[in-house]
Length: 292
Image (cartoon, rainbow, N blue to C red; front, side):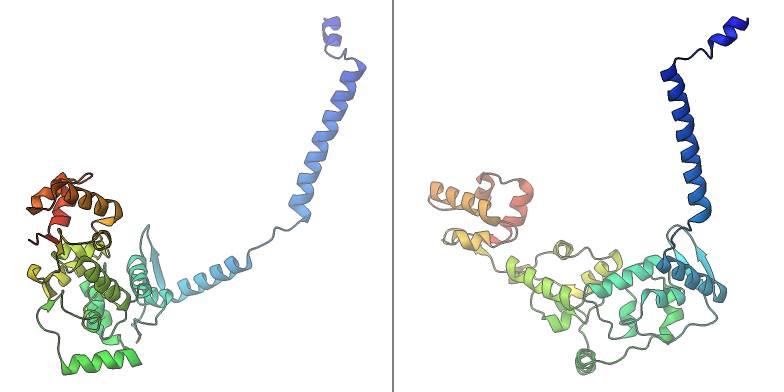
């Protein structure tokens, strides 16, 4: 038994040095860990610390409930605010959810300007109760632009229906959900298309919230007879290529088929154009005409 016990400690000199080195390395690691933990203070993020202090202070002043997707704040009473200038923290203090706050800020960043309190109604996720609660406190400061449009609105109220293919940008920006940038994009799209045929084409410009889109469908009228159509037998490749639904390659294919046919006899012959499918045909054919 004694010989078996001694055999466990019968190491060569190299093995003994290795064991001593391993023990030294373990002691060194433990010592460094102890030194770091007890003598070196971790650096703190000053901005994060200030943010936490501010948040705790806000919590002490207001009851704030936080869920996965919403932040709501209950305060003693709302305060007067301008939806064109108020920041996200102010909106949260008014009791709006984080989602509604995000939509309003994004809407403003896309060019939306509020000229009257009713312009806030189509804001996606803003409930009717929240709007009715805040409406008396909405105070919109007048500016050069708002003076112009407010004066225009008093002199000429918006008609029940606005011709989308004839209206101008000054009228479009007075519609809920459309700011100067979107108004410019709508007019540019109208020019490149040759006119709008369907309200759905507005969604090709911007993904409007459902409530805003339904409002625009009711407010904007479209007369398909007013669009400018492309004359298939006399148009140039450049004219075709500039159309949003056609492009350079499809324009070349349309003219290639025209050359082979000598001329187009009917719109349906566009189905024979290479790379033409039924969806593309439906979009393109509506903007083409046969000129004899």
